[in-house]
Length: 356
Image (cartoon, rainbow, N blue to C red; front, side, top):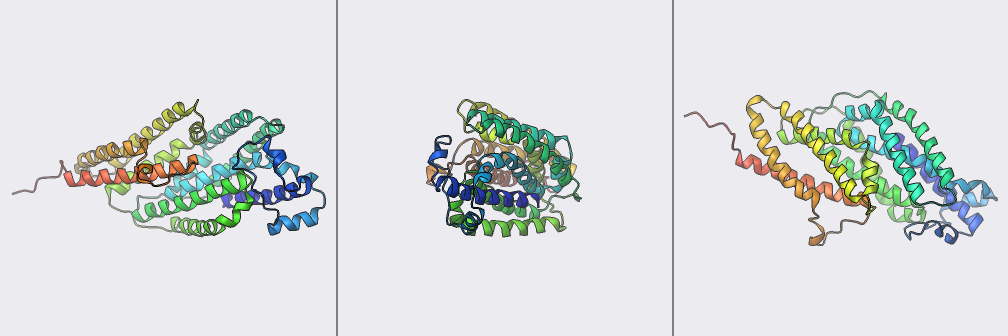
């Protein structure tokens, strides 16, 4: 899988970066902290076995300097997009192929690159000009990678309760890998690898199992809720592909948070309207009225769950990272949607009256 290959390259780069820090800066990140002020960066691991081996073997660390910022400027885009496509394929493989093989994949790559370049400019440092050029190199390399991923054959994926559960389990495993990879590799915290190694190993095993289950044929499930979640999820991943990174970074900047919120609302509303319409069209004509009543109740309960934080007041930590915050908000929204759907099933205002 492309995601695992790029993740391995990011790990190798971290080994090289730590060896460079040992050889050129005596493992002291003070020099770099004058350019990157966050305390969440630069927890180094000079005793990490591959680092110690490379230090002993290399002798001179000057050639390792690009491991700081420059290599990541090339790898961050393919890492992010292959993760997104992998998660999308867990839910609906044809949608993942549509994104990768079509113009939407290229547009998403350009959009992500533009966002990352804006972030580079806002965090200007002595390497920014090189990073901007390398972001473009990363874009050029990612476009054929997307086309290659899009050539993988995919079969139609009918709504299935088994595959829906498999998707949510795989989403959790993939999220753990992305969050762990971000903390360890993108923020230069190789020292944290020992703390999260078991989690990353378990997540890798679980994700591999979920990808295998996704490749196996499963019978369709005759459930309006499963059909609704299936189609809304497929539409959401399709609509969210291009603006995903812009919305994610917009949430972290006060000047852009309102615009990011509006963009997220438009994406969600579009996915709901088109996805529920697709799901309603798949229902028998005599069940469509009841379907829409359930859908309206489910959306009505899910909307405040998407907007308001229900867990923090209960003492549940939701995390400071935007990615973790989004996952928690997604979980409570899905729970509220399913609860609203169940309430709609109890009410059943359009249930046929039994003949006397």
